Length: 428
Image 1 (cartoon, helix red, strand yellow):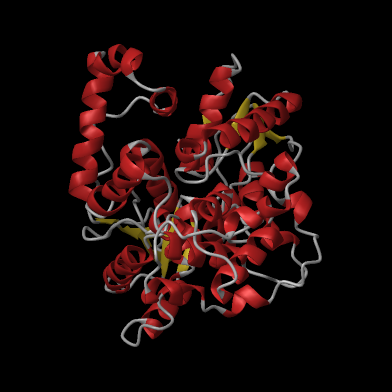
Image 2 (cartoon, rainbow, N blue to C red; image 1 turned 135 degrees about the vertical axis):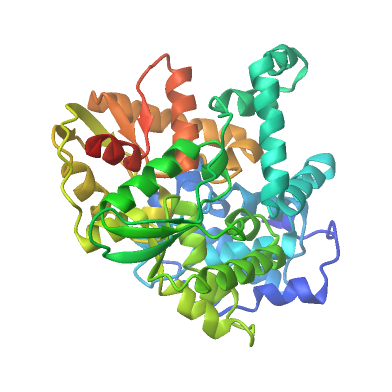
């Protein structure tokens, strides 16, 4: 690790250095049980690309034994933040918090133009639903006009691959009434996070989710002033923007008086369940954040908990299930989605090998770390194909985009569904 001890690329500010003052950093006993669960260590067999290796580096940085260099940043940002190490850790070390603290000290990934573009997207586009929709509509126009395909010949490989991952962008985004009534007797009043990617690229999945909730006796509130959950910001060094987004959502969702706050995106749910940690030192929001977190549930977790109204339509299909990292490792939700799948008449669930290993999507990881992402995706696609399944179920937008892309590259027409898609079909 001598390459890390050199002149820093940027002198960290006192406020950024304070991010490393966290108790989680000193809980690791370096037993190594996390190693074979870490995707980057399994691929490279290098200690600095393991959870305990990264913890050692961050501790050294916090103690002043090494400097903040571009090489240090590479080690931290090669992590997928999948949190598989947290599932494996006998000491209960919350590595995700350590990695987020280190990235807050580093700032967004990349350098030069790529770093500036990442910051513009995170802080200029995502926080504003209006700007995000304008951006996505522009992409949709380019896609439908053929200009996007024509422009591919001028794009670098990384951007060509990003373009290929895009699904057909819908003309209509998710824009329902603010309150939708329950069907039959009302069992709960729930508030729904419509999300960024889910409300645009997966508007149909959001609509299906709301219909399923209504059919299960839920009055659904979709607050107009809600915003991005802040997950991408927390994962990419923009923690202050993540806090601002958390405050906004806490205010908006608590004002609905809903019994629960639901999401159909695993990454969003994991981020919102961390709001109490994110705002623990905020005297104005610490208690409000705790009250908010107690209401947050993944929609599959919620439906299994209240008891699903059994769907009647038969869907004869052999499916395999992909565990989204932030659902399985972040939220510890594994059995509930499988129980809902098996409640659909005709569905045969066949488990794939290592279903809870990261597919390589990991937010914007497939754009910032394409080589490692591609390696993990190829492993995931191979495991899917071994099952002989007719479809893949993955209740998270990043997993859906990534796996669709991987199957397409492998020459497979196997469809990828969100779980709520199939549930909605089974009710119709």
